[in-house]
Image (cartoon, rainbow, N blue to C red; front, top):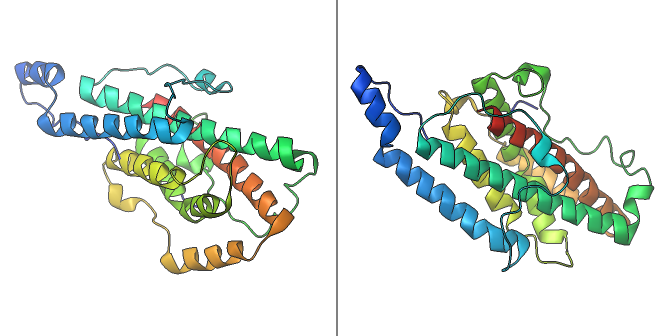
Length: 244
């Protein structure tokens, strides 16, 4: 599947050095507005993803070790927005990891080679070498296109999780809206956002119908496969954000 965004637009190029200095010191009103929106979204996501007493813990199982340090600094507003988007991606990965662990502990799914089951029936978003996301180099446009397209392609799978997965901790009703917001943000960072691949409604409806017919053990297996793949994709998303 082609690569899969909402982020701050780059500051307009300045024609004189003094203007560049001012742009770096004083972010545009548009950039600040986007920053505030992203901050508010992350603030809203924290209690819904981790409970009312949640704190922004960035590392649940080693994801903070992924990738390299950012090589260059940009405007403060853009930089803070990237940090908030990274936090949101890490939170989503952590929540999916927690749910997968619940399945492993309570349903013994992880011990039954579930990757073999239904392996030909589900087509998850994938990043290829051509998408040029870390660790396969980094091309901003291609990688963001791949990441954004992939995040949008998870819609049916995450809506299925929201409707059918029951967690001890809390309901899963926030995972797709949060993922969509992240996809919108990353898409807006592109120079050519119109090249992002959006899901086909007819295909989505057919896939949703296919998923809904499963019950019992098969449903648990599907939950596990979706969460496992989503965790992996979110790790790649965090690496891509760091590369920015």
